Figure 1: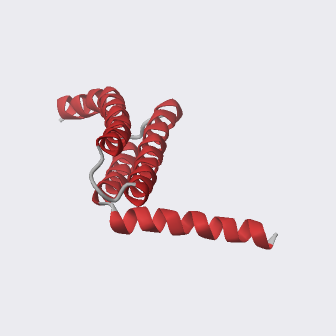
Figure 2: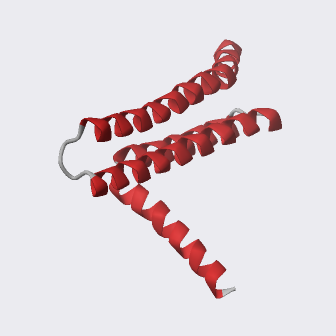
Length: 121
């Protein structure tokens, strides 16, 4: 049981490290909070919440994995290395793909509701 509790501590430590050291991770956390507030305000349905939560989790997970990959790459290759650069670029590309997916999903869910709200005024 002690081991299990310690493992949660390590996980929270990793989350804190990503939040404190990575500007993009903080941006994604605040974007997640904004999307959640907008979803609450617009009264999105359960299915839409599932998509929003999926986007938030995918974004945060890929950003954290990107941070882990970049940190490990810096550890094993502190000097410039073309292959290490490719590893970092591919990792950043994965984050970009999830960001595009999340943006499109958010637009599909939120834009019609915002247009309906504007038209009602």
